[in-house]
Length: 85
Image (cartoon, rainbow, N blue to C red; front, side, top):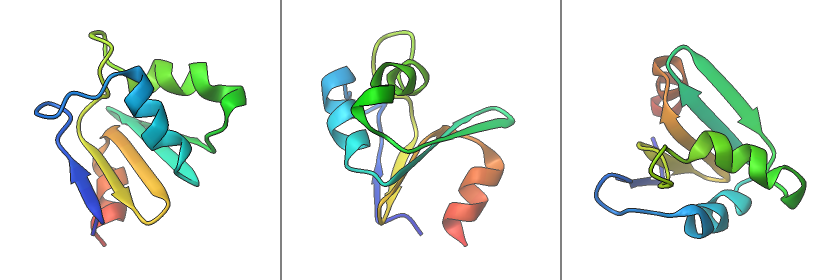
């Protein structure tokens, strides 16, 4: 189960706030439909990560969940099954 769940639709997080959250994670999983991308966040891949983590409005995509040092952004059914088991 996630340690922390942030409803990005209710608590809007822009790029700078999103990056502060992302860079603290050891691993980042970004779900989009049937596709999941996994990243190890660092300043060298900041732009690439923000491109997939931010929606067209520039806000962090929903849902966002943290479990330990793992961060999950966006939705993919298999990704969240792993999170809840």
